[in-house]
Structure formats: C-alpha cells, structure tokens
Amino acid sequence: MNIIETSYKWAYIPGNRITTTHLILHHAAAYFASAQTIHGWHLGNGWAGIAYHYYVRKDGSIYRGRPEYWSGGHTSNWNHCSIGICFEGNFDAETMPAAQAKAGAVLVANIKTRYPGIIVGRHRDYNSTVCPGRNFPFYEIVSYKVPETDKNGCPYGTSTELVKVGSTGEHVKRCQWYLRELGYNLGIIDGECNSHTVAGIIKFQIAKGLNVDGICDARTWAALESALYNAKEDEDMTDERFAELMNKYRSNLKDNDSSTWSEEARQWAIDTELFVGSGTTASGDPNYMWEDLLTREEAVTLMYRLARLLGKA
Image (cartoon, rainbow, N blue to C red; front, side, top):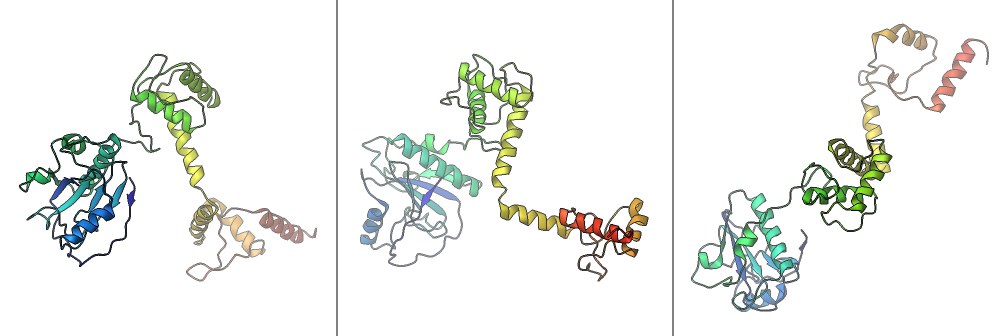
C-alpha cells in the first residue's frame, strides 16, 4: 500500500485528535476531483483545509489528506475520535471501480490492524446525509482481509497441500509462485497444475536431489520454502552487512575463552612467542583471540616463527 504525500496550505492547524474509536467512510459526491480540489472546496467553507485523512481515487491511488493524528472535519460531533476516508465519485449515481474498492479495502484493513477494535461506519450512520451513496460497496470494503503470507512473502497463503497434475486452487498458485521466484519459467500463475507446472516441479526436484515424480509433496514443499528463503538471505547479504556481522563475531572473541584440552599448547605458544597477541582484552591482558579465524597471512607468520624456533629460518 502506497500513500501519496501531498503538500497543502492550511488555513489553520485544527489540533490533534483526542482518541481514535471510529473510522468513517465518505464519498466526494463528485464524479472527478483531486485531493487538491477537495482541499480548495473545504478552504472555501472556512475550514482548515481538506477534512479527510485519506482520499482514494478511482484509479486506486491513495492520497494523504490531514495528518492521521489531527482531528478531522468530516463528521459533525465525531471528529474528535474518528479517522475519515473519502472516495472519489458520486456513489448515488455510479458504481465504484474495482481498483478503487480494492485500494480502499486495503487501507481500511491497515487502519483496523493499527487500531484494534476500531468501529467502521458510513457518514450517514452518524449524521443526516446520504453519504457515501446507495451504491457504495461498504460491506465489501470493510470485510476485506489482508491475504496471509508466509516467511518468503508469498501472496497465496501458506498451504502445503499436494500439487499434482489436475490440481487447482490457491495451493497450486503458491507452488507456481515459488517456482517462478526460483527462476523456473512456468508462464502465468493461474492455479492450474498443467504440464508447465509439472515440468517446473521436476526440474526443481532434479536440482535438489529429491525424488523425481512431478508432484509437490511435503518434502518438495519444504525444499521450495528453504531454497527461496536462502536465496533471499543471500540477496540481502551486502558487503556492509557481511562486514558488520564479521566485526560482531570477532568482537566476541576478545576474552581469550578457549577449551581446557588446548591449555598446555597455548601456554607453550605464548612462552615461545609463537603467538604474541593482538591488542588487549577488557582486563588489560594480551588478547590472543584463540578462537578467531586463521588467515593465510597469519598462517605463514606462524610457520615462519616456528621455523625460527627450530633454527630453520
């Protein structure tokens, strides 16, 4: 969900909302109007500016109105406790486009998540008005549920139901989505397990050393999820992130912790100056970092020091 931020010139600052108990939906009662147009109309009414907190246009774009924490100016006697959303259009005389309804539903669902228990209503439920119009798809919008996603962000749920030739449904879309994300060309995601889907499953099973049968069973599902999760982890591993993790790892080695089985050897290495330490620990003792990684530079230095001890260098 993308909120388009808009710069408005306010007549005055209405103040912050005291509490948030209601979410009230409106229409613009105008076939076409931008957020700035609404703002101008409301300034003409002597108001602070656009009365709503969000404005949803017919193409599905969502514009910021008033800052969400401000009091609204959209519903008499309820502005101190409500968020207002306005939808472009006149829904007494027209029907809402699918893109607009979907965007509004996602926005409402998002607000409901952030304000648990919030009551969603229409303008006419609180004031004497027909707003938001008799054709306004209120129940469709307020009953929308954000699709459940898994750890990899798949938008087709979390089902691991068996996928084989002839299978249909959301679990097939999920399998197709995973295969596509992993680079297997299946064409469109249509929820039908056809020859292209089976071919993708087979190629994946071969690549992962699984039983090759063209059926996405429990083991294949687990491998799909693991493969994509690991791929995403690799994508996220930037040079800066790697350096950060390595520095964190090495900082944990600065206390000279080590196992008792190596104690005699460690003391010999110190006494013969085979190891001389690198800096000091928090207590001021030489820091030998016994469990740190050994670089080639360090390895050749150790071999050179050992050769000197043996009179070979």
